[in-house]
Image 1: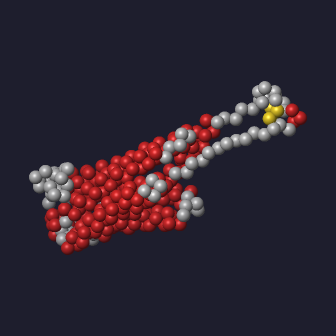
Image 2: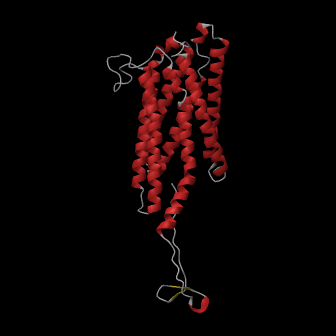
Image 3: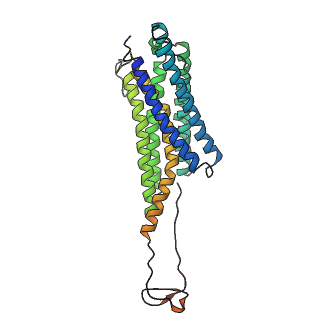
Length: 312
């Protein structure tokens, strides 16, 4: 067994996920400080649950390193056996929650379009089901060299997740463009949200595709990447699993940053609105000292300021 491509890869992958967990925790602290009082309780609970699941996921990764690299470093049979498979279940739950969050956004932006929202919900549920099946098989076949027993379900889950992330990003961009009102400040915010949707969806979907390339698969499971039932990448090592350990944190970061970006978008919208409609006042004295003078010297009895605020 090549320790560099197995335990070494897992060490790097888990350390990378720990770094991402630090970013998750920072985003969570920012969210609690700024939005915990104004958001509905269900949204706050969702953010807290995701952070707790990520915390458990990191503890499982640390336990894996302790068990395999310290306690059983000279016992090859135990090294090639997984400590537990709870992390796979946590990844499944986290991705399902995040996909549900974006499905609700699509439901609101599409003005309760059952077709668009239904497609997202069906794919998210199917992905969750394949993840649970793969989880069950991993308990039945705990050794890494028995991965072929659950490979098809694992590959199908990743394939659906990659397609779903791209689909969600595309729907959000389309719906945001449909909701443009012609107001400069609103369009600026919507363009930034659309750019964020593309980047976040691309990040998770590209990560899923990289895992698929590393693990390979069967022709029937992934016809657009696999040909002839041959392995594409590196199924005999744990590089694919090392990358997979970071999926949980990537999805949580995507959701939390989308929530925290609202403050930044509000500031931009305010700046654009103020620069687009400046208030000019003449230096001429007002007639009677009670009204504001215009450039023509005539008094203006009142000044009306019109502002618009759009919340997405």
